[in-house]
Image (tube, chains in turn brown, yellow):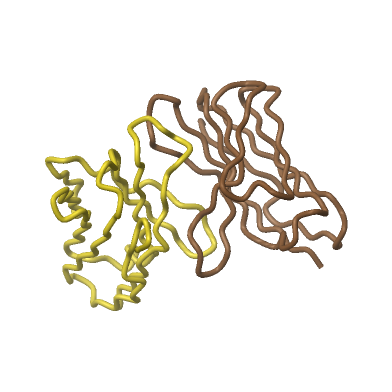
Length: 112
Length: 112
C-alpha cells in the first residue's frame, strides 16, 4: 500500500525538550512538506523540500528544523525555541510537477 | 482581504439535501484550485481539483469563476458521511507546490 506514515500519533513532552516527528512516504514523491494546524486556523507551512538534501523555510519556520537525507523521509524537530509547540502537525508529499498534496495521518503534539 | 475566504458555517442540512459552498480568493493570477475534506481530528484528504471547465465526481460538482474569483462546491443528495469540514485551497502559480493557500474551512453537518 502506498502512502504517508507519521509517528507517533500522539506525543507528550515537557517544556524545554526537543522532539522529533517522523514522516515517511513510499509514493516516490519528490516534494515533502510540514504543516501545523491550530484550532480555528488554517494550515500553516513550516518547511518544505523539493529534492533530497535541500529544503526551504515556510511561513512559520522559527523554532523548527528539518532534514532530508532520503527521498522517503522528512523528519521535523520541534525545538525548545518554539514558543507554542502544542498543535496538530501534518506531513504531506507531492510530485514536483503538480500542486496536489497528499497527507499523512498527523501527529498531535502536546507540550506540558 | 484574506487570500482565501470561506464561510465557516456550520451548515446543517437534512439527509438528501443539496448544499453549496463558495470560496473566494484574492490573487487573480491563481492557477490551481482544490477542495479537500477534513474529518474531525484527521488529516485533510483531496476531494477534487477544480478545473476551468468545471468538474463532477458523482454527487460532487466543483466550479471555477475566474471573473468573480471564486470556486464552488455543490453536494447533491447529502449523506450522513458527508459531515466534515471542507477546505478550499488555492495555488498562486502552477506547479509552485510550496505556496498552497488554505482556507479555514466550511463545516457541514448532515442530519438524519
